[in-house]
Each structure stands twice: as structure tokens, then as C-alpha cells.
Length: 121
Image (cartoon, rainbow, N blue to C red; front, side, top):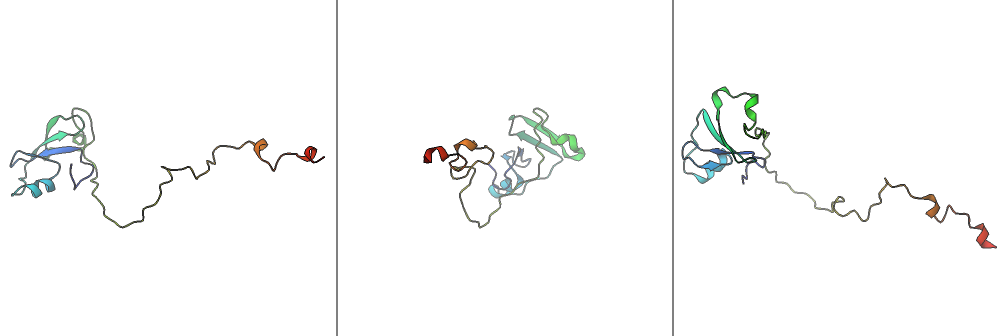
């Protein structure tokens, strides 16, 4: 699991040490050398677990998908964001205190709309 890119769709095989990493930063943290740059990259799709090669010299928009399962693996990277915030109750999880406005109430069930003059005598 990559801590640098949260939505990594493929793993890359480092051409220098022949080991698999989720991103180049993961390689640089665990290895004592920088990743070697090459024109042919080897990827492993995390969806179908198939390995494929891509030539980076003539990479175009059709190469952004896994050739086996059509998983779109070239996405904008989502990196972890740290921040200070206030934790609160999520109304989607515990909504017992909220009235559902979509349901129409029956007007006969209200005590204010009923004619109670026959009960007074």
C-alpha cells in the first residue's frame, strides 16, 4: 500500500533492482539508489493482477488503460492531506433525531386538525 499516492492503480517494476513498488517515492525510500529511468516500463494492474509493458517513447491516450481489463490507471494522484478539524456527528450515520421531510404526514393524525366539538357535550 502506497502512502504517497492513495489511488495507485498499478505497481511499477523498477528496472534497476527488478523489484515491485507502488510509486517511485516508495522505491527511493526503501532502496539505497535512485530509480533508473528507462523508456520501457513494466506495470502490474492491481485490478486484474496482470503484468504488461508500455513503451514510454510513444505513449498516447489509448495507453492509459490496462490492456487486459480496461482499468484506467492514469489518474490524478490523490496525496494524503493533513489538517486540523473538528470531529462531529455525521447525520448520515445516526439520523434518528432528524425528521424525514419527504414523507407526508396524515392530516387525520394531528390533534389540532380534528373536530372535537361532539366530545364537549
